[in-house]
Image (tube, rainbow, N blue to C red):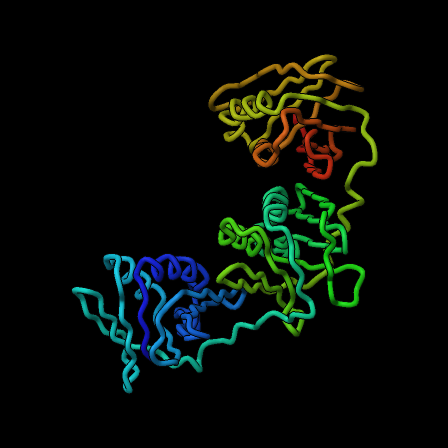
Length: 374
């Protein structure tokens, strides 16, 4: 195997691929990156057995071949080299020489036959999707997914595709985000089904967004065994396992009506939450919402610090009410809203509250309240 390419092309590619190397691998090969020649380009591959990546880089290929290099070592080494041409040459003893303008080094390689195969896309299940729409929608729901594996199904985002609609749902049991997307360009599922439902790990979707760059389109499909999903972008493929299990019936916890509605300015609410958080952090993150006739009062109490109270101008429809929420959940919701006005729909102190962005009727966020102890 013999090839050459520019350091300024290889370095960022290794930085991306290295993120998918297993941090605590029991198999030594999972600490490595697979280098392989592919149709006149160099393909870099890595996997942690949950996610895998194929990343293509332009290179001058003199001799075809493949090899495995330790990810941390090769990525760090290449990052220290100056920009310019690099020459790679694998000898008969499986030692790889790396030469730059003023440096020459040798790396021990592992046989590529030990590297796990990263499955490819089944073209029969693939369809194109508008990437900016997907990126915005994922950012609105993924933060609500659970981060621990106590209930693996809650670490996923429910993705339900139909020919003209996509519904994304995420919940950790304390909050719920739902986003419905009406597709301008109908999706051809090519799978013989009216809809396709996938449970995709939230962290996998977030990785897709990190790697997407400015691409206008993304191709999505399944592997032949339908146990993994593949995202295809320009010069890279990301493969993620699908989570198996029954997703909670999220629709039953969405309130059908409300006895109290609060219309409040987003920026003013966000500022009030930030002020209250200084005190709430010392008291289980609890912020009390006191709904008055024409205002919304937020308060937080921390015995070791003091207490905070702030009144916001708001339009109130319905009955006065006292209710409490975890301020972090509200901050997360506000961070992904675009409009100037927020609507909060409430019923009772211990029933879920619905939070809406007036500028986006297709986005809904539900937060479970915290029991107040006077």
